[in-house]
Image (tube, rainbow, N blue to C red; front, side, top):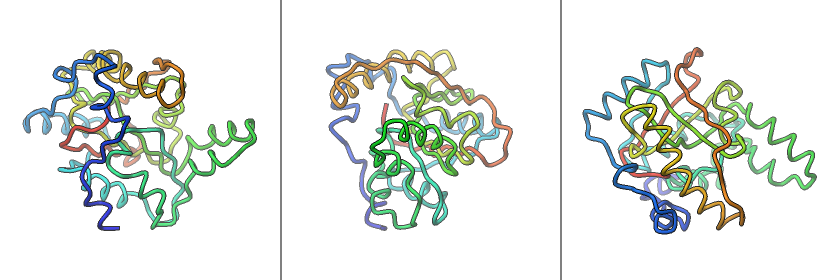
Length: 230
């Protein structure tokens, strides 16, 4: 297991670097690593909103942090996330060394459409739900967007524990900038991914903005000092 967590960022065929040309996005504007002072300011602002932040230096460190957060035998669900794939979470989930109850595997194994839909709805209330994010404002708001809401439905309340993983490249100055990042950067890249994987275009049907959490310890953001996801 130690070998898995020490691997470098796993660049996939659907990582941003392989979609940018067709997506026509401006990575210089929307995917830069902030300086240390900005990262510290952002972490403090997020924690002031009652969301815990674990600052990881590398993707391997982030993967280890995620594994440490989830106890043995826990019920686990994750939204589709390039960031989670890039840190190697998909490989850990496949090996499943801690005996987690993998809700995603249960959902995808169900052949009956109605039963699969019911399981998917139930899965957003998993004990531990993992997701990437699309943008983080220096003022502390964490923003997610999705076409159907399947990746963000757990965020506001449903999941008992919400674990978010993000590269520091998603930090932008303001909430308005965060929403622009969703539209001008994350969406065009996700649209390219969706066309290649599903043969259909994507769109933003739902936004979720985490502005404050009332339940102590419910939300943890693992923030990585690397460019991850989009």
